[in-house]
Length: 79
Image 1 (cartoon, one colour):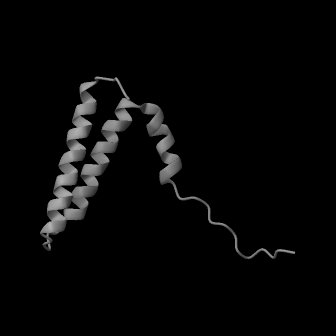
Image 2 (tube, helix red, strand yellow):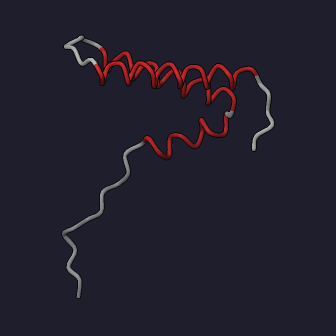
């Protein structure tokens, strides 16, 4: 269990809860609102920015997960 009491953690938790609530509301009452996905993406990006501020090492490692990975070559012949 984590014993860190940094108030920024509470902000992150609140932001995640609000995002989840908005996503549930959108799923329950879909409507053709333009930009809804963009808004959700912006909110997720904002949450990640808060997390990265708390843990700069995580921000550095994040690129490993977001950069495209090289594709495996399938034109090699196996003996």
